[in-house]
Length: 454
Image 1 (cartoon, one colour):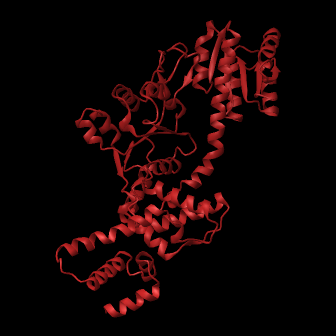
Image 2: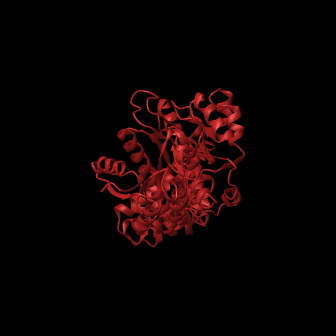
């Protein structure tokens, strides 16, 4: 079944005609010839969608709408009305009706409205079902922060999350966790039970981005055969997260600025002003001030977005977070991959701390997941680490030795070995086992050499 529909109308001919038309599309149809009967059927069967005639004997369509919404607020209701009482249809929209159809209407228009309405309901149900899961997944406490800057960032984010309308601009390199912070702010805010809509402005072609954000009416352009609800409208009462905002084309930036300031917009090809209530969070891995100087980003939009700026530092600048973050990933991935890892060896942890992480948190998580997917073990050991990480650590120590040798071309081989051993030990924070692996010798040999050095 495609879904269940309750039709409430006092005209038997209308009921039967609509029933036959909609059953062809596999909908389960329920019929009621009065408002009272419709409410009783609704309470018993809880259909996905209700078609209600405004002019009913007994309680009218407006009252039926109110009672249905009081029983189940997520139910989608479409009103049927004559042109003479159009103002009542407008009133019903304010009370929560999804749409209205003017008599006489085409069956094709009815079916299109039903399809759109059920799509919207499906979205609301998915949001409702996942919101508790998302809240748990994106608690601020689940974001690893031992670094002082990150602790301060989370303190700010917690405070700002509770401010319903304040816009936030999150900056930082790709992979530092801008999207995770945006989600945490939404799911720990008064809007947590409403939609969180995310769009990457760099991932959608310029000519499609506007229609994705604003939606469009039938005939707005070639192939626009039916109305499309845009992301701003889908985010109503919730949060919209505009990632990589710097890649938004200039003409669209002007329209987005208007949406943010007025909380209204018009679908492409439409004339009606649509009122929304959304919170705006944006992110960028680019320098927006530089983009303003080069004419690629609007200065007025920047200041409208930059009410609360949050800059997330790269992972290499918060090395104290790397191992705790690794342990957190291990805990999560144990459940996903059905593994039983207990942690990471001291030698592997040292290398993880020393690596530069050009891909930031995303790279760290991907590497941990790769290791756990390929190796069924109890700990992440140094042998499991990708070669590029170990190669970087091996390559970094000789550079200092090279500089030192350049100062004295008559240095002896024994002195060079001593200097190199000391440099490697410094690089491993005194970890002799790890230093021996880097040097390619047995730990006993290293201990013997250290005795001679001392």
